[in-house]
Image (cartoon, rainbow, N blue to C red; front, side, top):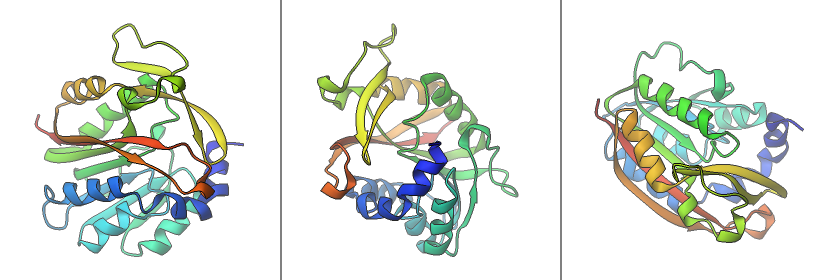
Length: 225
């Protein structure tokens, strides 16, 4: 089963499991304090459009969202009719057509399937799309917050990340690459960002989600150069 097929298969239950995440709601509301009116926002890995795109669009911002799963994109367009959504793979996506620069990019829980080098390339590319004083908002997990029994391998030689972290997600066993908190801060600084807020908030999914408790790590970073 491909990644797109997997997310197509869980689209109907995904929103019920994850859309009411208090930490994620906090991230979106905090980020909006930094955004200008009618900001141009890109939601990468938009899922069903809730809660990120829907909250931003309801606040008057101009939202474009992409997702690799067609069913997710269809749900996003239905849930957020004022947004614009398309099927795209973030690995070869070149930014929203007709928008030269963005005021914010959100990437929420969509980096877990990628390796360290891919994640580093994403941050560099997204940074090139964002205006000075614009935001990059990330929802992920940091190695620092994961239970030791989920770490299957040692840290990279620079101690900024670990490539094999076990996680049970929607009925499937997964292995992720995760950065440490220090690794995230350094990566963002190297690409012209300053971290203005960061925190961990434990998310306990409903039993029907068949997902491990998740120590989600949230980052709001401002483009400064």
